[in-house]
Length: 200
Image (cartoon, rainbow, N blue to C red; front, top):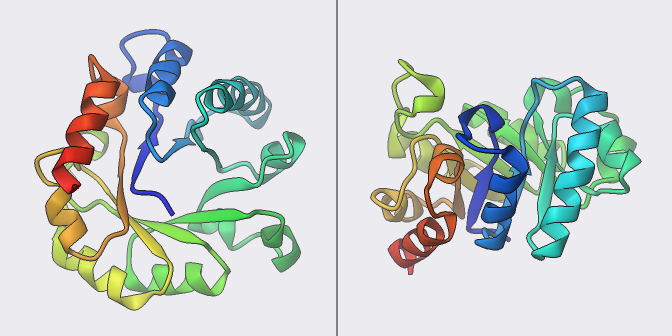
């Protein structure tokens, strides 16, 4: 479905977040996940509305995060949820979404997400990352085990760059999620080219 996904984190941006999002969307990753889950839902909804307009302008798919009701308010059917949130949704609520992702940290969670009807999962953290300082990476063997345990797309997460994305793909992942790289890169388009070249 996707290959390279940008996950947002406005606290990592050195500049205006919406300007950063515009530059990232213009670089055409295969999708953008608007993570910003620390926001109250009303604020997230306002931000999501702006983000949706930016991503639509650049024809970059936008996946909302954490707030199913905000997604429904925007008639948006792409969402990513933490496992505790996913577990609270009924089958009917889950069926509203055409793309349903979940954050998984073990084989058991990966299998559970698949049973819940997820169309993809993220698996992490594969390598050590600034986003989770002090937390050692689980490694590519962990990633391989998750990829082999489910029949849905698996996107590696955590410390992924142009230097190691090929190793991630060789481990069976369908793609990779990158946060710090896109939030901090001087030139998101150049980063995108480096990532694509590394897996071509």
